Length: 402
Image (tube, rainbow, N blue to C red; front, top):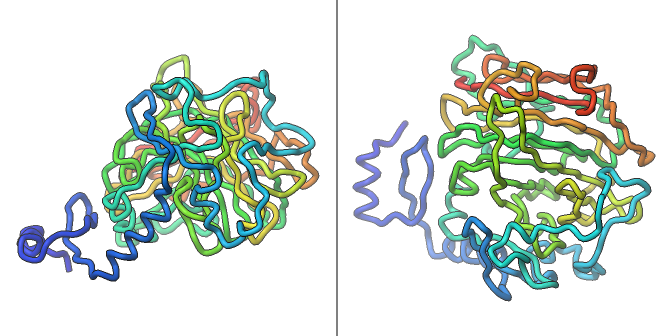
């Protein structure tokens, strides 16, 4: 039964409101016990490590410079006898992204022009309100892959799903993958406070997975800007970015994971703005690395011990949306794809690193999948005749409203 908002307001006045729980766009009261408050404070302490200094991005957002060895990822039980260092870089037979120089960086994203001091990494601080807001959405709010989704009867209006997908995906779970890349067009789809719309690369490893790309996620970032993110699901835990012990381990002192990158692409413009992402498994030690930017800079990694499986077995490129209530949000530009770069959000030059660490840029075995084409569609262009320099390109998007 839906609780009247007026009743909730009276209960807040009488007993006190100690958290925010989203129900559509209204707030309901919840009172925590002392034990629950202590647990929340314990989680915040685990996320917000002591900082060397606080610095700001060019947009004025605050990040804490945390000692490399004190970031949350080092709290994982497997890190007791680690040999990791912030100067670590991956080793593999062939680079997925060709580097042009060896001295590039992300200092231009910071007010001070350089980022954090050497030996520290920039991590956004998490407030109690941030934590309670994310907790309020529940497990349905968490990102996922499309493989366990089925296309339901579109006439069954009672069968409302919280997640929708429009992706190009592999379907052979026996395949072994050591990495994947993409060039992703940056867009800012319209979403409500209890929704997200994400354009991402997803690599499945058995029952676990990692994602990276751009997301418009007010619940996570408290605004409607497209922001970089990674999401980890491993060992029965999951989290965004570096906010828990199974999260990514950062190695750069100048890359603000979670930053809003500008400019944003505009539908109909001849020039599109994009970000380059790679998820690559180190050939020597099995660590998974996140690459970002046209120079293929290594931002951070997941130790091989994080995951039960030692390789990826499924991969998909495309959009994922979540909505706590009807109607569902936009994906991409909010229009169905036309197979034109100027009018569609897309991922181009997609590639995989196969079991033998060979680069496969054709990736000609993907399946187009949309769980509900009334709201979202995808076009997997393997012909590459129209855009020969774009390589294998995936167009996706839709108005949602389902």
